[in-house]
Length: 201
Image 1 (spheres, rainbow, N blue to C red):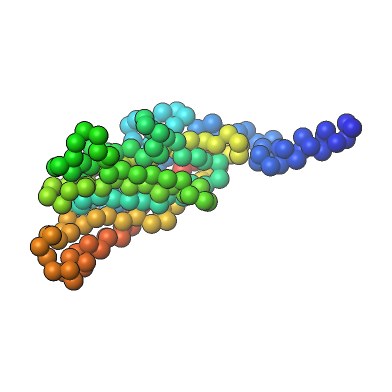
Image 2: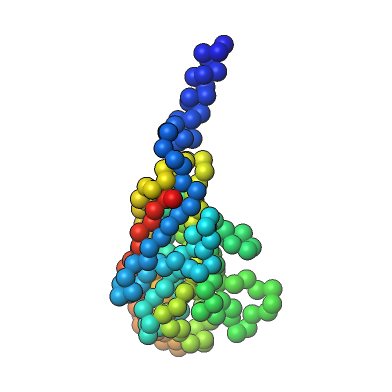
């Protein structure tokens, strides 16, 4: 009986990823990519010792109408949520309501977790009558936390990966455009997003 209990305990440790004598991390440290990188994920001032918040920032002067990103977190890291329960927060740049929206109409913001520890998130302008916005500011935020169930080792380097990122361009056409021209303008602009250095502490 005692042997069975010991075996079960060891199995639980292996499954949880905690079968290690190394110190376990409780926080995440992040170093921003160079400011010359164009589109970047940067550490947001709202970050705390236990919760790393990253903002998606574009190059100043680039006009867009919305952005979306698929972000894969490494083992040992989980995505946190913001007020309202979503795993993304609006940066306040885009107009997420239509000019005709009432107060109960939903905002054009969405996020969902997918297999492989992937977060798909985006913020978008609903109304083409509103002007495109300068992307040189925080457009959206995501939060990362240490996942205690996997017990990442303190001091270990982690890889945060942008699987895909895209923006709605400035010119998305007018409703009076011919269908062929409108379809061409509605194509998303693929983005190359620079990611900084992530370390478990």
